[in-house]
Length: 268
Image (cartoon, rainbow, N blue to C red; front, side, top):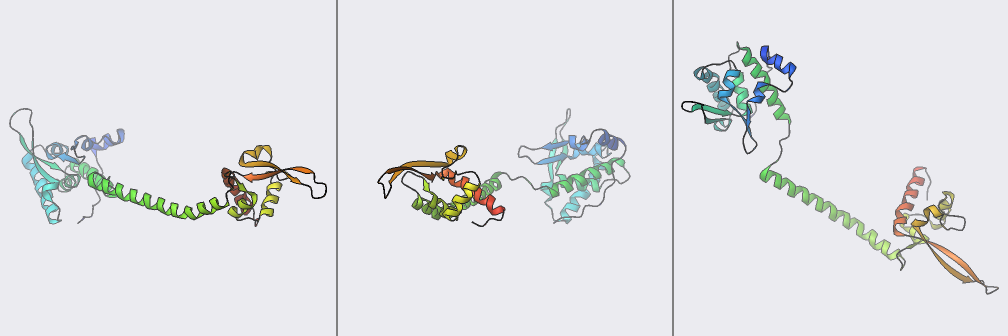
Protein backbone atom coordinates (compact mmCIF):
# COMPACT_ATOMS: atom_id res chain seq x y z
CA UNK A 1 0.00 0.00 0.00
CA UNK A 2 1.37 3.46 -0.84
CA UNK A 3 0.67 6.92 0.49
CA UNK A 4 0.59 10.25 -1.28
CA UNK A 5 3.64 12.36 -0.63
CA UNK A 6 2.53 15.90 0.37
CA UNK A 7 4.36 18.96 -0.80
CA UNK A 8 7.14 19.74 1.65
CA UNK A 9 8.67 23.00 2.81
CA UNK A 10 12.07 23.74 1.26
CA UNK A 11 15.07 23.76 3.61
CA UNK A 12 15.94 27.00 5.35
CA UNK A 13 18.79 28.46 7.35
CA UNK A 14 21.88 26.29 7.70
CA UNK A 15 20.46 23.50 5.54
CA UNK A 16 19.52 25.80 2.67
CA UNK A 17 22.96 27.43 2.73
CA UNK A 18 24.63 24.04 2.78
CA UNK A 19 22.66 22.71 -0.19
CA UNK A 20 23.32 25.91 -2.15
CA UNK A 21 27.09 25.86 -1.62
CA UNK A 22 27.57 22.09 -1.57
CA UNK A 23 24.97 20.32 -3.72
CA UNK A 24 24.46 16.79 -2.46
CA UNK A 25 26.24 17.58 0.84
CA UNK A 26 23.07 17.37 2.95
CA UNK A 27 23.73 16.45 6.59
CA UNK A 28 21.06 13.78 6.17
CA UNK A 29 23.26 12.18 3.53
CA UNK A 30 26.18 12.16 5.92
CA UNK A 31 24.32 10.22 8.62
CA UNK A 32 22.99 7.68 6.17
CA UNK A 33 24.29 4.17 6.90
CA UNK A 34 24.56 1.11 4.66
CA UNK A 35 24.42 -2.48 5.90
CA UNK A 36 26.50 -5.34 4.54
CA UNK A 37 23.58 -6.46 2.35
CA UNK A 38 23.45 -3.03 0.71
CA UNK A 39 20.28 -1.81 2.47
CA UNK A 40 20.34 1.73 3.85
CA UNK A 41 19.09 3.15 7.12
CA UNK A 42 19.24 6.23 9.35
CA UNK A 43 19.90 6.05 13.08
CA UNK A 44 17.06 7.74 14.97
CA UNK A 45 19.66 9.02 17.45
CA UNK A 46 21.64 10.63 14.63
CA UNK A 47 18.50 12.06 13.05
CA UNK A 48 17.22 13.56 16.31
CA UNK A 49 19.55 16.62 16.54
CA UNK A 50 19.27 17.31 12.81
CA UNK A 51 15.51 17.70 13.30
CA UNK A 52 16.03 20.16 16.16
CA UNK A 53 15.40 17.81 19.09
CA UNK A 54 17.80 17.72 22.04
CA UNK A 55 16.10 15.07 24.18
CA UNK A 56 15.25 11.50 23.21
CA UNK A 57 11.98 11.59 25.15
CA UNK A 58 10.80 14.54 23.05
CA UNK A 59 11.92 12.92 19.83
CA UNK A 60 9.92 9.86 20.85
CA UNK A 61 6.71 11.76 20.02
CA UNK A 62 7.23 12.00 16.22
CA UNK A 63 8.87 8.58 16.28
CA UNK A 64 5.82 6.91 17.85
CA UNK A 65 3.46 8.81 15.56
CA UNK A 66 5.46 7.65 12.54
CA UNK A 67 5.24 4.04 13.72
CA UNK A 68 1.48 4.36 14.12
CA UNK A 69 1.16 5.87 10.64
CA UNK A 70 3.16 3.02 9.11
CA UNK A 71 1.07 0.44 10.96
CA UNK A 72 -2.19 2.05 9.81
CA UNK A 73 -0.91 2.01 6.25
CA UNK A 74 -0.24 -1.74 6.48
CA UNK A 75 3.56 -1.55 6.49
CA UNK A 76 5.88 -3.82 8.47
CA UNK A 77 6.77 -1.61 11.43
CA UNK A 78 9.55 -3.87 12.71
CA UNK A 79 11.26 -3.84 9.33
CA UNK A 80 11.06 -0.06 8.84
CA UNK A 81 11.74 0.81 12.51
CA UNK A 82 14.26 -1.85 13.54
CA UNK A 83 15.07 -1.61 17.25
CA UNK A 84 18.78 -1.30 18.04
CA UNK A 85 21.23 -0.02 20.62
CA UNK A 86 23.56 2.89 19.99
CA UNK A 87 27.02 2.40 21.43
CA UNK A 88 27.95 5.36 23.61
CA UNK A 89 31.49 6.66 24.07
CA UNK A 90 30.93 6.46 27.82
CA UNK A 91 28.13 4.99 29.87
CA UNK A 92 25.56 2.37 28.88
CA UNK A 93 24.31 1.83 25.34
CA UNK A 94 21.29 3.93 24.41
CA UNK A 95 18.01 2.82 22.86
CA UNK A 96 17.91 3.51 19.12
CA UNK A 97 16.01 2.67 15.92
CA UNK A 98 17.37 1.90 12.47
CA UNK A 99 14.98 3.80 10.22
CA UNK A 100 14.39 2.91 6.60
CA UNK A 101 14.16 5.76 4.10
CA UNK A 102 10.37 5.52 4.30
CA UNK A 103 10.40 5.44 8.11
CA UNK A 104 12.66 8.49 8.28
CA UNK A 105 10.26 10.28 5.95
CA UNK A 106 7.33 9.48 8.25
CA UNK A 107 9.28 10.68 11.29
CA UNK A 108 10.04 13.96 9.51
CA UNK A 109 6.40 14.41 8.51
CA UNK A 110 5.32 13.91 12.15
CA UNK A 111 7.88 16.34 13.55
CA UNK A 112 7.20 19.74 15.10
CA UNK A 113 6.12 21.96 12.15
CA UNK A 114 7.48 25.03 13.95
CA UNK A 115 11.06 23.77 13.72
CA UNK A 116 12.94 24.82 10.55
CA UNK A 117 15.08 21.71 10.94
CA UNK A 118 11.94 19.58 10.62
CA UNK A 119 11.04 21.39 7.41
CA UNK A 120 14.52 20.63 6.08
CA UNK A 121 14.12 16.95 6.98
CA UNK A 122 10.71 16.84 5.31
CA UNK A 123 12.14 18.32 2.12
CA UNK A 124 15.09 15.93 2.08
CA UNK A 125 13.21 12.70 2.73
CA UNK A 126 10.26 13.63 0.50
CA UNK A 127 12.62 14.15 -2.43
CA UNK A 128 14.69 11.05 -1.69
CA UNK A 129 11.57 8.90 -1.27
CA UNK A 130 10.20 10.08 -4.62
CA UNK A 131 13.55 9.33 -6.23
CA UNK A 132 13.54 5.82 -4.77
CA UNK A 133 10.04 5.20 -6.11
CA UNK A 134 11.03 6.15 -9.67
CA UNK A 135 14.31 4.20 -9.82
CA UNK A 136 14.18 0.54 -10.84
CA UNK A 137 15.85 -1.40 -8.02
CA UNK A 138 18.98 -3.35 -8.89
CA UNK A 139 18.52 -7.09 -8.86
CA UNK A 140 20.58 -9.15 -6.46
CA UNK A 141 20.86 -12.69 -5.18
CA UNK A 142 18.20 -15.13 -6.43
CA UNK A 143 16.41 -12.41 -8.44
CA UNK A 144 19.59 -11.58 -10.33
CA UNK A 145 20.29 -15.27 -11.00
CA UNK A 146 16.74 -15.87 -12.22
CA UNK A 147 16.93 -12.82 -14.49
CA UNK A 148 20.25 -14.02 -15.92
CA UNK A 149 18.79 -17.49 -16.62
CA UNK A 150 15.78 -15.98 -18.40
CA UNK A 151 18.00 -13.73 -20.54
CA UNK A 152 20.26 -16.67 -21.39
CA UNK A 153 17.26 -18.73 -22.44
CA UNK A 154 16.04 -15.90 -24.65
CA UNK A 155 19.47 -15.63 -26.30
CA UNK A 156 19.62 -19.38 -26.92
CA UNK A 157 16.11 -19.39 -28.36
CA UNK A 158 17.00 -16.49 -30.68
CA UNK A 159 20.14 -18.31 -31.83
CA UNK A 160 18.17 -21.51 -32.46
CA UNK A 161 15.67 -19.54 -34.56
CA UNK A 162 18.50 -17.91 -36.50
CA UNK A 163 20.17 -21.28 -37.11
CA UNK A 164 16.88 -22.78 -38.28
CA UNK A 165 16.42 -19.81 -40.60
CA UNK A 166 19.91 -20.14 -42.07
CA UNK A 167 19.94 -23.93 -42.52
CA UNK A 168 17.84 -23.95 -45.74
CA UNK A 169 19.97 -21.12 -47.15
CA UNK A 170 23.16 -22.98 -46.26
CA UNK A 171 21.90 -26.13 -47.97
CA UNK A 172 20.93 -24.09 -51.03
CA UNK A 173 24.34 -22.41 -51.14
CA UNK A 174 26.13 -25.75 -50.75
CA UNK A 175 24.15 -27.24 -53.62
CA UNK A 176 25.25 -24.40 -55.92
CA UNK A 177 28.88 -24.39 -54.80
CA UNK A 178 31.58 -25.66 -57.12
CA UNK A 179 34.02 -28.35 -55.99
CA UNK A 180 36.68 -25.73 -55.26
CA UNK A 181 34.35 -23.76 -52.99
CA UNK A 182 33.48 -21.00 -55.44
CA UNK A 183 30.26 -20.09 -57.23
CA UNK A 184 29.67 -19.68 -60.92
CA UNK A 185 28.17 -16.41 -62.06
CA UNK A 186 24.91 -18.26 -62.72
CA UNK A 187 24.87 -19.71 -59.20
CA UNK A 188 25.69 -16.32 -57.68
CA UNK A 189 22.87 -14.67 -59.61
CA UNK A 190 20.41 -17.28 -58.32
CA UNK A 191 21.53 -16.74 -54.73
CA UNK A 192 21.16 -12.98 -55.11
CA UNK A 193 17.87 -13.21 -56.97
CA UNK A 194 19.18 -11.69 -60.20
CA UNK A 195 19.21 -12.80 -63.77
CA UNK A 196 22.75 -13.82 -64.79
CA UNK A 197 22.98 -11.59 -67.86
CA UNK A 198 21.49 -8.60 -66.04
CA UNK A 199 23.91 -9.04 -63.15
CA UNK A 200 26.93 -9.29 -65.45
CA UNK A 201 25.81 -6.22 -67.38
CA UNK A 202 25.35 -4.12 -64.25
CA UNK A 203 28.70 -5.24 -62.83
CA UNK A 204 30.33 -4.09 -66.05
CA UNK A 205 28.51 -0.76 -65.85
CA UNK A 206 29.61 -0.38 -62.23
CA UNK A 207 33.24 -0.93 -63.16
CA UNK A 208 33.56 -4.22 -61.29
CA UNK A 209 33.93 -6.40 -64.38
CA UNK A 210 35.77 -5.61 -67.59
CA UNK A 211 34.21 -6.01 -71.01
CA UNK A 212 35.46 -9.61 -71.12
CA UNK A 213 33.74 -10.30 -67.76
CA UNK A 214 37.03 -10.55 -65.88
CA UNK A 215 37.25 -8.49 -62.69
CA UNK A 216 39.26 -5.33 -62.45
CA UNK A 217 42.33 -5.66 -60.26
CA UNK A 218 40.88 -3.71 -57.34
CA UNK A 219 38.01 -6.21 -57.06
CA UNK A 220 39.96 -9.32 -57.99
CA UNK A 221 40.06 -10.67 -54.42
CA UNK A 222 36.29 -11.23 -54.54
CA UNK A 223 36.59 -13.52 -57.53
CA UNK A 224 38.54 -16.47 -58.85
CA UNK A 225 39.54 -16.51 -62.51
CA UNK A 226 39.99 -20.04 -63.91
CA UNK A 227 41.95 -20.32 -67.18
CA UNK A 228 40.88 -22.84 -69.79
CA UNK A 229 40.73 -23.52 -73.52
CA UNK A 230 38.22 -24.48 -76.11
CA UNK A 231 38.62 -25.90 -79.61
CA UNK A 232 37.60 -23.70 -82.52
CA UNK A 233 34.94 -25.69 -84.43
CA UNK A 234 36.27 -24.77 -87.87
CA UNK A 235 40.02 -24.50 -87.47
CA UNK A 236 40.52 -26.92 -84.60
CA UNK A 237 42.71 -24.31 -82.95
CA UNK A 238 42.95 -24.28 -79.12
CA UNK A 239 41.66 -20.91 -77.97
CA UNK A 240 42.62 -19.77 -74.42
CA UNK A 241 39.71 -18.70 -72.22
CA UNK A 242 39.16 -17.43 -68.67
CA UNK A 243 36.03 -17.91 -66.55
CA UNK A 244 35.15 -15.75 -63.56
CA UNK A 245 33.85 -17.41 -60.40
CA UNK A 246 32.72 -15.76 -57.19
CA UNK A 247 34.46 -16.56 -53.91
CA UNK A 248 32.17 -17.04 -50.86
CA UNK A 249 33.08 -13.62 -49.35
CA UNK A 250 32.39 -12.12 -52.76
CA UNK A 251 28.71 -12.97 -52.41
CA UNK A 252 28.33 -10.37 -49.69
CA UNK A 253 30.21 -7.89 -51.86
CA UNK A 254 27.81 -8.53 -54.74
CA UNK A 255 24.83 -8.38 -52.38
CA UNK A 256 25.78 -4.81 -51.46
CA UNK A 257 25.76 -3.88 -55.12
CA UNK A 258 22.27 -5.37 -55.39
CA UNK A 259 21.06 -3.30 -52.44
CA UNK A 260 22.56 -0.11 -53.88
CA UNK A 261 20.95 -0.70 -57.25
CA UNK A 262 17.64 -1.55 -55.59
CA UNK A 263 17.85 1.70 -53.62
CA UNK A 264 18.27 3.54 -56.92
CA UNK A 265 15.09 1.91 -58.19
CA UNK A 266 16.73 -0.64 -60.49
CA UNK A 267 14.78 -3.89 -60.83
CA UNK A 268 17.05 -6.89 -61.25
